[in-house]
Amino acid sequence: MATESEGEEEVATAAAGGAEGGGAARLRGSAELEVDKEWLREVGKNAAWTVSSFKPGNGVSCLVDSNLDTFWQSDGAQPHLVNIQFERKVKLQLLVLYVDFKLDESYTPSKISIRAGDGFHNLKEIKTVELVKPVGWVHISLSGTDPREIFVNTFMLQIGILSNHLNGRDTHVRQIKIYGPRPNPVPHQPFHFTSQEFQTYSTIR
Image (cartoon, rainbow, N blue to C red; front, side, top):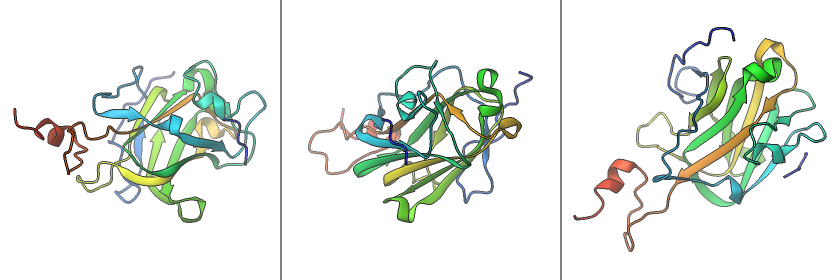
């Protein structure tokens, strides 16, 4: 395991759905990183990141360097894997990837599987998405099919690149960010509200 830490665009035809929810969502990307930082915080810095393979100079550190000009490039057989492991179980709500079909063409992922679990031994697929000539930030909700399941509680998240555009072999991903709900902002509150609606009305004004 490696451990270095255009055409006319089609619109998305579905919201990001679960792997058991009747097929993969189809996404194309956004120019803006759209995250409500009042309710979500970036937690990737607290994790250990590994990848299944990489070209020298294009390792896993390129996924988290906040530089859109760099990229992780795989160097092996599909699927290409990014493993994100936490020391303790964490709530994860949103996964965001930056990919660019205009620059990377056949290196651009076209189908992605997202898996969660305690470790490699029991990973379960929770989401699949199809990317349609994406340019920009691809926002993938980690919520389940049940509206009450707004996050996944896990030790590990794995991103599997199952295929690329134009039948490309290796892949390019320029950035990955992962977000979880912010801790309960209400001191001494016994309940942990994780949705914006509940937190809004969690105190008497």
